[in-house]
View 1: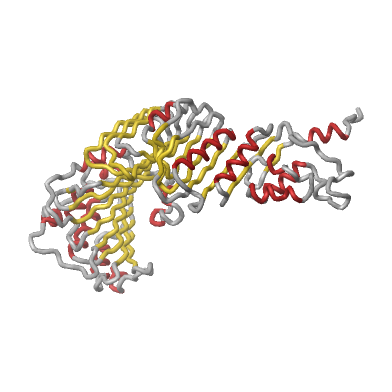
View 2: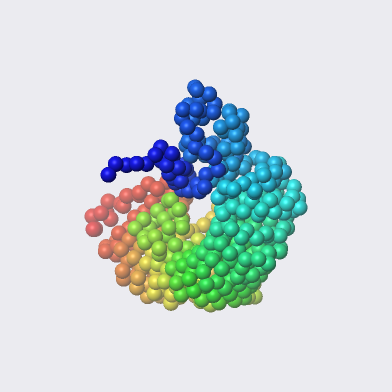
Length: 505
């Protein structure tokens, strides 16, 4: 049957086609605000072939300009371009005064085709007080977009009310960690699925979450000591607390799959988290006060994360490690003062939620002290014995010139650690960075060897001034021929074993 579609009907179909921008977003214009012009009568004159293109194609040209100001300036080309920029699916404002942005948004708010995404960044030169911030946010609310990216890069602390965005599905704030939303709206964010408040803190996170019934992703900073989140929809949650000391965490999130916490606490932290679907946990916890660990060393921070969170090059030591495997990173420092309170290590570790970590990453700021007794106690914790497959130890003395540990120093207690063993049944690989070859370090190395029946590889990176200890190290390797042993310089260059070592293999 012969196709009877008229040119007008084909043009009408074109007007409803999906337009794909460079950013990858696909936007359907329905209904179009302007009439598709005929190629035979270009409004810019017979030679103006660009203006003769359909509106959809002209909008693709305007989208490449990436700025609302640049797109608006095309209105001077001809009447065909006049106000065409207002039909862009994305509006981006950079380095524009807030008053001008408010005027543009007020003009477009009554337009039949409101852009779906609004991206605003106010530089410090245009930022003023919290009144100006609230006035600009009110203009954004009246604009009623579905996606909002809002940056307010002011250097001073501001307080503001968080307005309600009833049509928004995605909101992203980018600030300089200096805005606090002290008042929340009474209405619901009925469509909101993604909320990221980067650099903006909230006093009442729990109330905010209850007013977002469809929220799936939340990234927020808190300004109170309690973190309470009860949600039936949340799947990804990121919470940070830099300005306050967190004392209580209460989460009831049955659909939560990813959790990231970056907080400062004391040892009296109370944790109650119910998240049966949780698969990925990242938790950086710094301690506000020095807390003794095993009587001489103090625990400064704990960091639980997955392998894929280290970024490019961050997992060079364990290239074959499962990206979803959890790493436990501890920063432990030799104490110079006598503190009365001692941390119950096992109790603190139980607050980490994940106990099946496979990589233990330790940074020891030794200040020249013996660390073997500490490691014997630490590695003897039952969760480390049961789960750790790979051990990474970073050694740092903190002194330009290394100092000898004084006689009868408590760092070497109990002294019988040198003849003890630990049941490290899962340990397969060990890397020690900053090895000097001192006797107590070689004693620790022997402890690892005799305690790890599954050990297959040990690599040592020497300190800059290691004192010619490579022969002693390779002699230790020689006693365990089933384990691959490597010694590297600070530069990463492999130190070859002595000839008599090779002869014994």
